[in-house]
Length: 93
Image 1 (cartoon, helix red, strand yellow):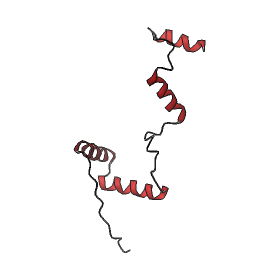
Image 2 (tube, one colour):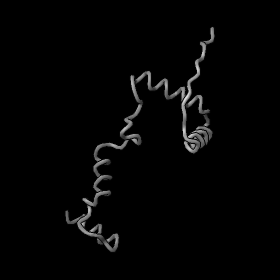
Image 3 (cartoon, helix red, strand yellow):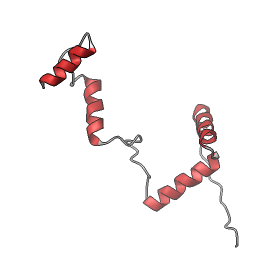
Image 4 (spheres, helix red, strand yellow):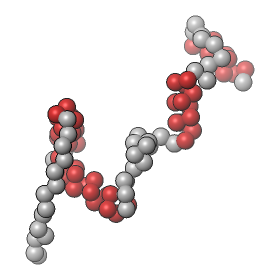
């Protein structure tokens, strides 16, 4: 079987990003080069990002709304002193 010629690709990263990338690759048992090849393959198969870049953790719309409510305080009618008070308020709705 003939080997396909490989072409290099280069990217500039902050040192902390590079270090974290290398550490994560090692932790999951792959190399940075393999991780980049896997990303490029998925990118090409999908015709774009293999994930929503505006939502990289894959949260659904309901979860994103709940997270926004928590950040903006829209989900709290008032602060609660205990978990029991909070649960009682939830039961009232």
